[in-house]
Image (cartoon, rainbow, N blue to C red; front, side, top):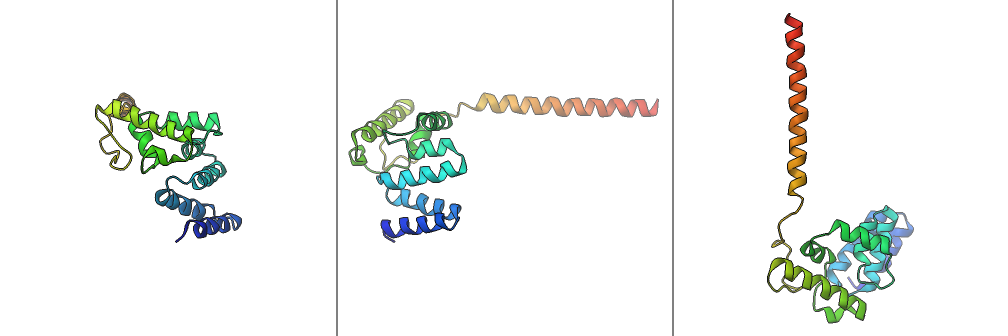
Amino acid sequence: MALTDTLARADADLAAGRIPMARTRLRGLVQAYPASAEVRRRLAEIYRLYGEPEQAGRWMYLEEDRDPVETAAFEDRYVLPARRMRALAWRGHESLAGSAFAEAQLTAVRVACAESLGRAVDWDTFTGEEEEPDTGGVRRVAGCAGTFLLVAAFVAIWVNGLIDLFD
């Protein structure tokens, strides 16, 4: 289906209040037309309707007139360069971006990803499966330890209650 036809269908979906369907159509278009600034802008608008600034920032990341709050939310959500690179869903060389700003953004993300992985990467072959280690491991360990402590406290209270019951 052509880009203009699918955009028209997404507009019709929005007019009819079918926001999830419009979002699905636009997500498909981003995959098919990653260099289309119009598709990325429209997808950002959908995520604004949902109140998801990190996703709006994701799809406006290549635009010079982007919202700094949304950009910061996106960068906070996708801290690791490899995750940010995958999230942008770009294909092709940076020169296809359509603006000097977008080209610079894409180049910066790719270079940061290559530096963090210690090897060259490009937009067409990068899958994101070779990401750098997750830095959230400490949080997971702390969460597990906290859960263990809560369960241990519950069991201690329960055992104490049983002892009092039979005394």
